[in-house]
Length: 71
Image (cartoon, rainbow, N blue to C red; front, top):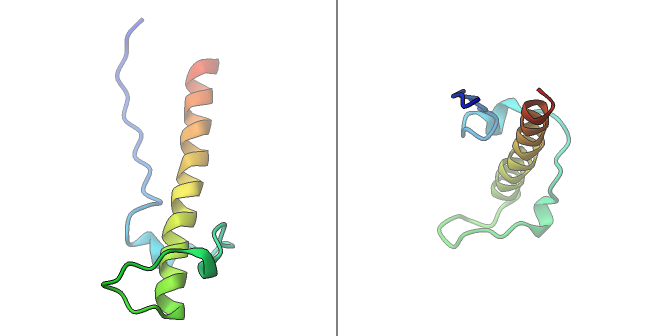
């Protein structure tokens, strides 16, 4: 039966760059730094945190999809 549902996952919002304290899943040394940013340790860590948050969001979405399939 058709249904509608909204799942708000906020982990990739910019404010989460500074709230997430877990280990990074992306190595800051390997992230591409856009030319409009200075290539600094802080910039690399922020980019790596964002990419890590995207990976964590992907895991959460996978869990939601699995729960929907199970239900």
